[in-house]
Amino acid sequence: MSARVENHRSDPDRAWVAYEPDARRPWSLALAAHLYRRAAFGANWGQLQQALSEGPQRTADRLLRPQAAEVAAFDRRGGESESMAGGSVENLQAWWLRRMIETPHPLLEKMTLFWHSHFALNAGGVSDPRLMQAHLGLLRSHALGSFDSLLRGIARDPAMFLWLGADRNRKASPNEGFVRPLLETFTLGPGHCTDQDVQAAARAFTGWSVLRGQLRYLDLEYDGASQRFLGREGSFAAQDIVRIVAEHPATAQTIVRRLYRWLISETQDPDDALLAPLVASFAGDRDIARLVETMLRSNLLFSPFSYRQKVKGPVELAVGMTQALEAMVSTTQLAQEVAGLGQSLCRPPTVKGWAGGSHWINTAALVGRHNLAAALLLTGKRYETKLDPWAVAQKHGRGTPEAAGRFLLELLVQDDLEPATRDALLHDVRTPAAAKEPGAALRRLAYVVMTLPEYHLS
Image 1 (tube, helix red, strand yellow):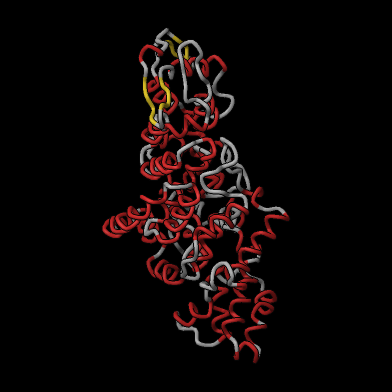
Image 2 (cartoon, helix red, strand yellow):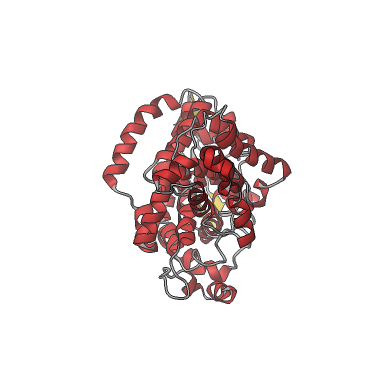
């Protein structure tokens, strides 16, 4: 198997071809769950069974393009609660987590979360939570659309200017607060522009200021003098800078690399040759959905090189726990738990967002993750024991504690365990005590499974 993985990595054309199951690489419960972990936040049993029946490509179709009527109905219902979400950052966090749990289009929320870290904006630098709400709406509306349109929106987002301290940009004192991260973090990446380029971009953005929560343009404050920017000469306006950096080859490389880490693997950096076909394609049209679709259908995604090669972030972990066990909990409380694990929605730590990967895992974080599983499954004080593994197992036809235990291993880790580990986990649900109190026994088992290393890998 490892040889075939290396062949995929050394043969870019083969790596990005759509995966088709065969005798050597059959479609399985493990791969169905893997696809849901990458394109969503996990799956419940019904979704996994449907995916097994339909196969990888039809499952990808549903994740990429869910039924429009269902999405529209969900958005209408969500719009009512969204109107109240902007009252505070805490309300907005809770609203977004609930949306992640309930949405019929989880890929859209997963990609909104990706862009939230890429265009990292901390509500602490924005006085009005409604501006943060509008920012998240901007990310969502373009999350699977045109990168050019998304970038133009970011360059007109008052919340972003406030967060970066670029809310005033005068001819006499050009402000680099927005344009430096625009060039060095959001698009080109480090090493592709000089201080002179940054200064020229700042001058192109002169005249733009945030007044009473709105971005406004003062023509008298615009510096229209000719500038040199990324090898070009001209009297550049803000929209020219955005267009030039969006079209720059380094921007395609930056976005493809970050999406590779988000959707494929974060354990090893891919070489340029592997990414070259995707970079060339994305540079041509900057179509985010097409790039995401190529990755989600690819041979490489369904190879051992990608399988469980990411660490679940706190949001993915918490949302996945509730979805798998088909329950809704207090997302106000859940948002606090997620923040305690290092991922406070609307409050990324720096302009570079959350580092992810191994940064999610340290001694304190692991204790916190185990405590979250305990709070959801064992104590019941914060979440009113709404997660009920025994009830879910019975719903899907498992009528004995042992059958329910085996069901949980398949649901939560796809039985991806050594035989000795599996037997040890099932020991308690085979006892007379479990027969008397199956609910308690199944809660303990689910808790232990949710603390296994395998469960924390995506």
